[in-house]
Amino acid sequence: MQSMFKPQLLQGILCMCGAIFLFAGSDALSKYLAGFYAVVMIIWVRYIIHSSLMLVVMLPRSGFAVFKTRNPGLQLLRGLCMVGTNMLFISALRYIPLAEGTAIVYLTPLIVTILSGPLLGERVRPLQWFAVSLGFVGVLVMLRPGGALFTSVSLLAVGAAFTFSLYQLITRKLNATDSSATTNLLSGLVGSAALTFIAPFFWQTPSAHHALLLLALGVSALLSHLLMTEAYKHTNPATLAPFTYGQLIFAGLIGYLFFGHIPDLYSVIGITIICAGGILVLSPKPGAGTRNVQ
Image (cartoon, rainbow, N blue to C red; front, side, top):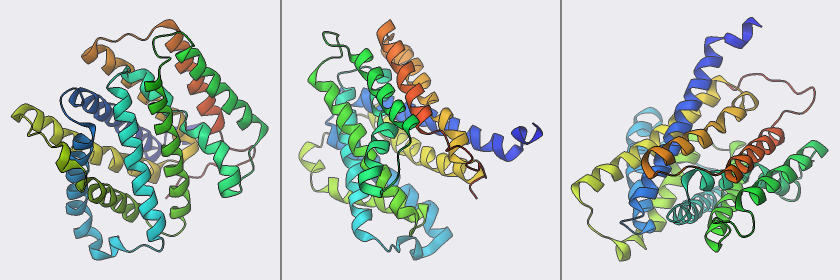
């Protein structure tokens, strides 16, 4: 009982809570800015700021060794998957509420479970298949045919969940060969480089107020990733998994405070079912250890 209150465990949980709050805040900023600027421009500026700050943080620590990778092809693919995820998700957020959009993307653990068999050769347990079914039922309840969210725009968020699932599966493969610092930095650089060829065609000079918000978007993106990395250093993923769903709570609160949106009963029920499915699918195998990730 005493081990549950280890400072290391508490530090990991607090870091994760800070990370998901910043993720929700970043999504809200992106949603707001998407009402004024092209999605490509917003993501490009975010990547440029994020990558520049990562270089400032990591180069003094690791030098040019941080660029070394054994899987350049997978690193490129991971970076492009993240670009696709951001493009699809922020495009969806222009039209659908923050909480519901976030909930759809939280199908990711369920899609990862489906794909982990054919792509990684992992065995999926019956409980996990039940969790996958539960999660998709939650989406159907939330979107419900004939409801306000049952539109083609919601498919953008579903697409974001799919590309984010590929991103996570690639990350699993890269974890065996490359450091998390290298992987995160290279993904940022890939995104920055890829969008540099497109963004100038969509460029609008932002106002001073919006320029500050774009800067805040890039800084919050960096801090959220650093906090999440720190969380996994102190606490094992199985313990942290339920706390990641706190982002749905933050998204709901921010959506209400800044966009005046209150999820209806169907959305609340659907989001709850998706959370239950996600937590079930991430539950450790019977008898699996729960040692901390060092």
